[in-house]
Length: 84
Image 1 (cartoon, rainbow, N blue to C red):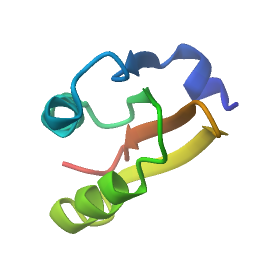
Image 2 (cartoon, one colour):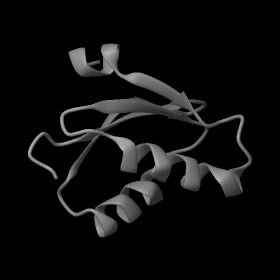
Image 3 (cartoon, rainbow, N blue to C red):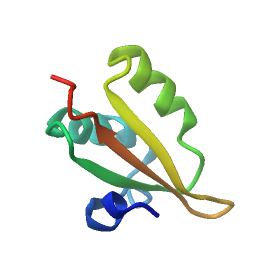
Image 4 (cartoon, rainbow, N blue to C red):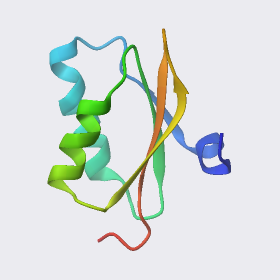
């Protein structure tokens, strides 16, 4: 785990109904300030979310797996410092 992940906010979406998860995650992503991040906790690999994020905001975010299942997935999502 990187130093950033240790100090990043942790957002556990496992308690949300699946239909509400992406909206919540994108709300958090949109609110990120450059150079900040949060750790997403999910019950499956959120890889489709990565593709959606990259399509809508190409090159602006980092995506680093902290834990890769099989029960829990943790991904640190950060906004690059140079992203506006």
